[in-house]
Image (cartoon, rainbow, N blue to C red; front, side, top):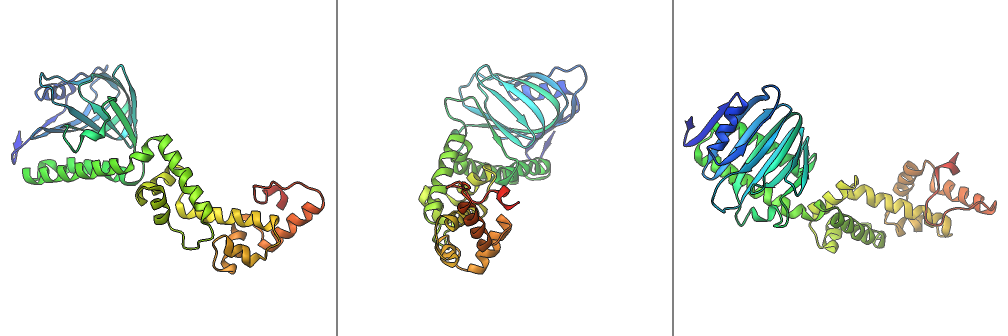
Length: 324
């Protein structure tokens, strides 16, 4: 049927859904011992196709079947489920809160292992989307359990829900805005999506933080500038490592203070300022929260151990067993 200039089709049977896609130059087969399709919709707007489906365990193939040589990408957004896609060159696993990006010139064999709710967005490659997938790759998978990636995944499901209720102009605007957000986000987060790159970035950032602990006003903005990256990217780098900038910086300060307390005879107040705490009372409070002992008692404990000939690791703070 057509609603407000938009072609919308709804299917209750898998084979009908396959036929609907074939009319749009996409080949999709689905094999299963039982009817697997719970709900499926196909929306077409210009050269863009959006589908939303909930499908049970099944397997088959998917590809674009057309004689023209236009590049097409398939973006698959999985809210919940589990699928394995193989194109003979690469294998991709999509599960809860993941996004797959596929070159639709390759034939993908999929294995769906449980009920899966997903959205497909098929679109022509252009200057904006050509960087979503490197020319040497046929697929990539993005984990988006948290952050902006999750917001974007949930956003496309909201767009799909409202698609038949909006005008052609509204849908065109929504999808244009969505793709700009998606491409901007992916471009900016590229450094941490490759594990080698974000590990290197984390090392550069933490080295800079160690060298500047004395600066009580050290910020993530300054650190990001040193790393030649954006604040949002650096935040994501720490998030991937299951850390946050502020907590890691505070932990660095306290660890450095603990080392100074047993390696030097400097006054505790001086050590606090040296490690970036501009208030000695606050330093003492945070130190006790971390090590369960005051800085003074910590120093006395270590000095007693040293006099008794016990070894204290030169690069680590007081170990928990010494507090027993």
